[in-house]
Structures are given as structure tokens and as C-alpha cells.
Image 1: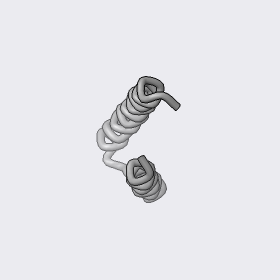
Image 2: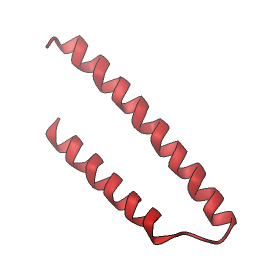
Image 3: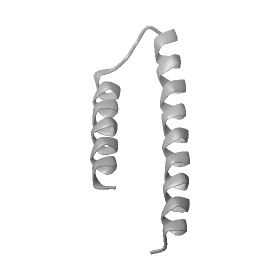
Length: 59
């Protein structure tokens, strides 16, 4: 794969990750407003962070 293509894919992926993070932050804000944060959401956040870390390590 050419370098330009790799860079393009990297930026597309980064853009998608930012969208997902913003979605999660909006959800988190709503939950905080309700003063309720179920443990399943914390687990989701942990898994998401782990996956992001593994993904960045493979680049």
C-alpha cells in the first residue's frame, strides 16, 4: 500500500474514532445529568480504551 493511501486511511479512522468518542461523551453527560452511571457503561469504556490502545500499538 502506498504511503498516501495509508495516511488517508489513518485520518479516516481517526475521524471515526473522534465521532465515537464524542457520542460516548454525550451519552456520559446525559447519564451524569441523571446522576446514574450503570457499571455496564464503565465496562464499555474500559473495553473501548483497551481496543484503542491495542490498535495504536499495531500501527
